[in-house]
Image 1 (cartoon, rainbow, N blue to C red):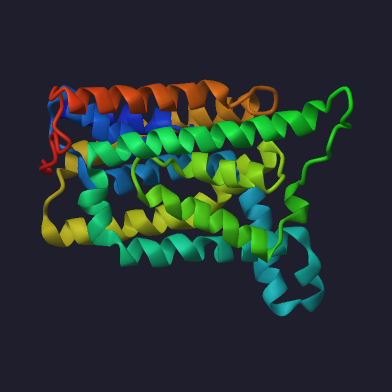
Image 2 (cartoon, rainbow, N blue to C red):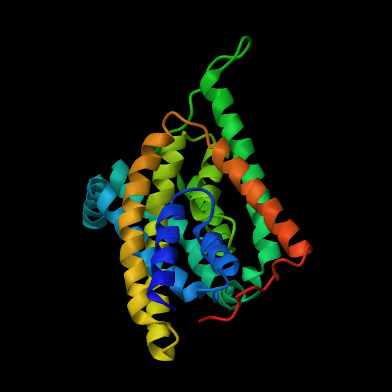
Length: 291
């Protein structure tokens, strides 16, 4: 991998990680369109450490409060009813599905799941799901002539059942094209949560999963020697800087705006990808060899 490739891929990772359009799909597609080698699941996992560091800094006050309350609740029974302490447990519970499924389907994630036809399918299908969830949220918020405005749930109403559902939604992002934020936000909206609550829990829930995945891939890459370390680390720093700017913008955007621009983009990109593969312009396995 060249330094230029690492810069572009780090930029793509940072731009797309927090938007509901799938960073793993865009890294895969960038390489395919440019004629480069697929950066691979290891590169994706390691550069995601950069974007998750941006989450840690952006939500540092929330995270410090949750971690402190959770540790105190281990020895202080009165703290166990505290919302922040409960959030700590809910992040742990919600992380179980992706941990189990990630280990179980590791070979598929690094192989068959990176087929461009599957990516096109998930881009379209999950785009439609996000669109439906967004419309339901907008209807509740706006009300209507014969319908009162419906109050949506905040994170204070999050329980174990919903936490696990969020977790299974996040696990769908093991398939490139699904989008971690897109799947969890869609799940949250369909369960009746506000856009801001769904996005905030989505980002908090991603922290243990992404960091664990990155550390796991770092260990494998160190032993296997199949990662270009210089360019990969450079891409991780690029992803961190761009990712922090994007998450700051996105959290402001979702408080007043619809997700429909992302829905339209996902569906059009998926259709374009199907057309290019069907026409023979792109092979379903374009650039699949790691480089």
